[in-house]
Amino acid sequence: GCLPQGEPSASGGTPPVSHPAESGGTLPAEDGEEMRAVWLSYVELNRLLSVDTVEAVQAALDEVMDNCVSYGVNAVMFHVRANSDAYYASSLFGPAAAAAPWLDAGFDPLAYAVQAAHSRGLELHAWVNPYRVGAKEENKRCDDVFSRTVGDAPVWYYVPSSASVQKLILDGIRELLRYDIDGVQFDDYFYPTEDEAFDQQAYEAYCAQAQKSGTALSRSDWRLANINAMVSLVYQTVKAENKTVVFGISPQGNFSNNQ
Image (cartoon, rainbow, N blue to C red; front, side, top):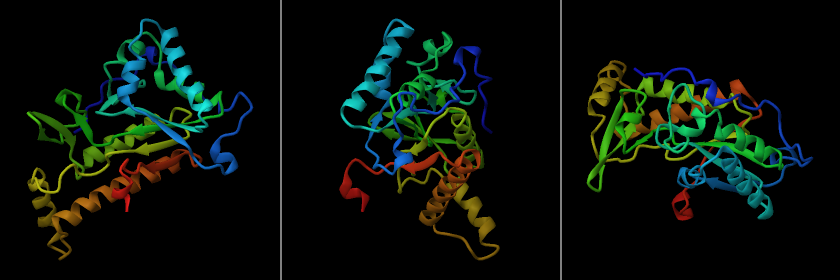
């Protein structure tokens, strides 16, 4: 099953509840303007958070938002969870290493980023990698994981067919919706391989049950159905919690692969 880490400490701060453009601007979703977004990845966040004071972190995030405005960007995709670790106050996922000292000090990077974006008329979307655990197995919050060897080291993923994994993902989305975010965006939401039979036991268990009614899917179609179910449940969860929040999935950076 999935293992909660404990309640977020008072150090996590309180997510903002007001919405948004305190500067008087309008958000893209409000006026039909096209979305021009920048993806602020965990790699960049690690750099921005590698400073000495809370004020320096605030200044770094403010500079990002100011740059977005100057370049005509109107939405920021903030990488809240890249490898089953959190850049916000979470009761489900352990803190990302770069965010941990600030959360312990009472500063929540996501809460501040939302406020900084909205005060400039920018949307702020929470960017999530739902299945990735990464190179550190200890980041897993659920026992249903598998690994693939990439280079010389294992990289860990959650098992998409697992009910416990689906619950963890949905609970994580509900947690993010406590913040005044404008959207949830997924990336790497698929099986990382088609060939390896890491889920052989789960697939055989599915077949044993499904064949009773003669409706067993091929492994490929079964995997696709697992992903479709997760995406559908996340969409329903987002809309049930807040109808104004959007849910989307990132296209690949290589546009030729998006056909």
